[in-house]
Image (cartoon, rainbow over all chains, first blue to last red; front, side, top):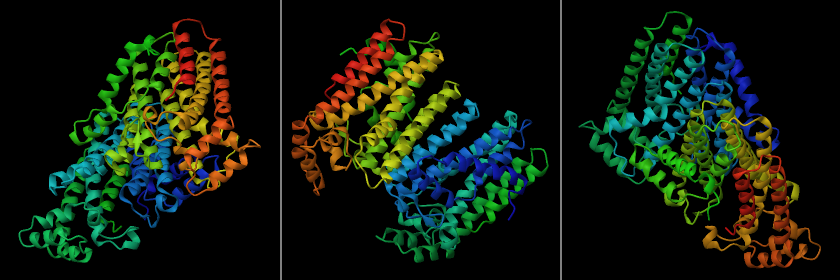
Length: 316
Length: 316
């Protein structure tokens, strides 16, 4: 699909910049960076940077491409570290960096990616851009630290939204903001695009959490129901637990030492919790589309509308 | 001892800035940052930033303090991650973050510290400062990645110097450069201070590697001979291996499954390898003192001379 056709040329530049930045004279380090390249993802964040950048008067391609590549590297860094944190073996259908190499190498690779990303941000010569980028990493980390230290793990909906805001919402918001800032868009436009990013970010994560239960594991690139094994309760679980009919059954299932993924999934389907979660995601997509209406119509706005619809419709 | 008496007031400001930057509204995150504060180190890197800053015409205290605090946070981040990488239980005489909390929390804490450090660097509004700081992290990580993937671990002296340059030399060099840059020192002065930092950095690491064998474990805050357990050969080992009399005995000892720290230490003492290593450190201290001579005499230069001598004389 040609979701990003409007910025196809720029995306090629982003890939080139990524390749360039990951390259290292040391052949041992290159083993790792070549491997990272193989396991590349959807490039949603750099695409948001580039699309948001279309709303600025001065489209400095150089800066936009740097920011887009840097944002993707931050994303890669968090994924590589997440796999260490979650003992995950598979990422994007391939063995995780920690599996292919080792945990120490994965910790260092994440750090290396952060460092390279900040070098790219610095190349823009824009401390405001750098500062927001560092803020994103900070919000993601402290959100996760709090989650890890929160032994009780009460499955409240408010806790869920707070968590996914820190984990995904703020990063997608910031990707849009950073693109608009790099293109010298007005404060109002930066704000509008930030709100758009915030809403699609929340929707993205909710859809992710639904797909965790229903997606084809091959397409998803990881095992179904992984969250429950890790003891993390996402929106579908929280919604089903709140259901007077299905809640008690589910609570019993989850109290088992090794909850059956199959049994839990059946409850989520039968109770309508998965559909309920999808509806919540849809609401955020609608809000995102609504704020977009305040921006001038054109190809860039249409592309952002398409991105919002794609997030809702994707099956992996 | 009052090694940093010249910059005592500024060091208090650095501590305040660190405390401020580590503070978090979330009480769970605060558990971690309070703990980090307890286990604070010698503050060598921020002191170098402040002392180097004395050689600039315009001593913007604000920027110097930000850079000094940020440099210390980068250092803290690498230590927290190093402990995860090395499965180390003790740091600075206290349980490591990974021991006190968990490996996941330690990985995230390191990332959080990096993010906060880069926010501080960004506050200077100086992309050149940010860029060098990110470069330091990059050099440290890729150096360590290469070391981890280098299964053979041939113990050559050239490999040793390359490793400690990436691990310590470049960071101390950069601390001096960053301080001078933040104070708007001339390129020549930045360069001279950089060379000074490079040499004391190498000396610092060699002395560290010697102390690893002879220091009082209580003062050192970690077990003696830890490197050998981790299979890392430092300069004393390399020097003793090259000795025609003691080399073969040592090689045999090291080939054992669990080399005896006591037996290895005896060889290092008897062969004179520890003294040989100290001499190499001394040579770098001399070079550092020599480049300092090109700077204007005064309190700041004397303080840097004292730092160099302190690095050589320290016992933990």
